[in-house]
Image (cartoon, rainbow, N blue to C red; front, side):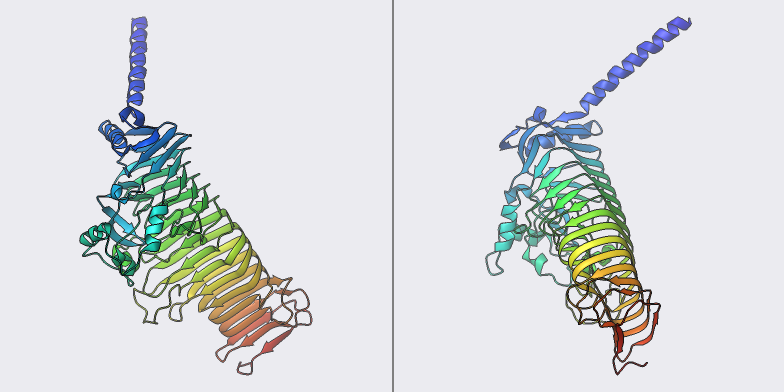
Length: 517
C-alpha cells in the first residue's frame, strides 16, 4: 500500500512540474511571435501591444525582445509586466510626433498636464519592470530641434492646439510661460502612480526630455543602468528624476547627460503644494556621473517637500556642479534630513556644493506656505577639485539652517561662501584656494569653524572673513604659511565671536572699526 502511495505521489509531482513548465512558457511572450519585425523595417507598436495584452490575460509575464532592431511608438505597461530587452536587442523609438498621440495624464517640470505619451508609460500599475542588457534609443534630436527653434510669434502647431484644448483648467506655476507654449516633450520612461517598479541593466540614449522619471510611485529601484544624452545639444535631458516618490533606490549606474544627472523633485509652486506629495526615503549609491549640469540635484521643483535622502559612494567627474540644492521664493516646500557621504568630485566647472535659495531672482515676500526651507543637511568624507568649493545662500527671511561639513577636502580657485545661514558647523575641512579667503560668512549666526586648515591661500587674503555674524566660534584652526591675516571680522551687527586655540603663526586678526570689540 505504501508503494502505491509513493507511485501516486511521484506521478502527481511529475504532473505538477510539467504543468508548471507549461505555465512558465506561456508567460514568456516573444514579441517576434506576435508579428514584430526585428530588422527596424516597420513600426512594431501594434505587435508589442499584442504581446503585452496576451501577458495581461494570463495574469502577467515577461515580454521578450530577442536580438535585433525594433522600431516602435510608445510602449504602455500594465500590472505584472516585465519588459526584457536581450543583449543585442535595440528598441528605437519613432521621432514622428503623431505616434505619441493620444495625449495622456502626465507631469511636466512639476506641473500636472495632459501631454504626449512618454516612450515607456504606465499609470496606476504595479509590479512593472524594464530589464536586460539591450539598448533603448529615444532619437530625441527632432524633439530638441523643435523646442530650440520654436518662436512665440509663429503659428500654433496642431500638437500645441491639442495641448491647449486638453489643458484649459490646469493649475499653473508662478511663471506659466512654458506651459502656455504648449509643446511639452515626453519623458523617456514615466510611470505614474505605480508600485513596485524595477529598471535594471539597460542602456538608454538620446531621450527627448527627462529620461527616467517615475511620478507619485512607491518602491522604485533603478539599478545598473547606463544613460547617455549629448551634453551640448540635448536640452533638459536629465538622467534619473524620481518626483514625489517614496522608497526609491538608485545604484550602480553610469550617467552622462545634457542636464542634471540625478534630480529629486516634488512639484512646482501651487501645483506641487496642492498635490503635497513629498519625495522621501531615497538612497543613491555607487553611481558615476560625467557630463551634466549637476551630479545630484534637489529642486528647483520641490514644493511638495524633500526629506530623508541618503547620497553615498559616488563619483562626479566633469559635471558643472556636484551636489546642488536649489529653490526660490514662491516654491514653498521643505528640504530636510539629507545625508551625503563618501563622494569624490573632479573637474567641477562651478561649485562642488551648492545650497541656493535664490535660484530665480524674485521680490522679497512675507514668510508663508510659499517660503521654501533647507535644514538639517549633513555632508562628510568629500574630496573635490573644483572652481568654487561651496556656496550657501539662504533667504534673509528664511536662513539655511543646521548644516555640517566633516572631513572634507577642497582644491579650489575660490573657497566657501556662506550667507543668510544659521547653525553651520565646519569640522575637519581643508580648503586650498587661489583667490579670496578660504571661508567667507555674512549675515549669519551661530557659526562653528573647527579644525579648518589651509595649506595654500593668496598672501593678501585672510583665511576667514566674517561680516555681520552673530555668534561665531573659531577654534583649532591651522594657517600654514605666508598669509598675513588669519581672520577679518567686520560688520556693525557682528557680535559674540570667540577665537580659541588657533594655530596662526604671525598672522593677525583684523577688526573693522564698526565692530563692537
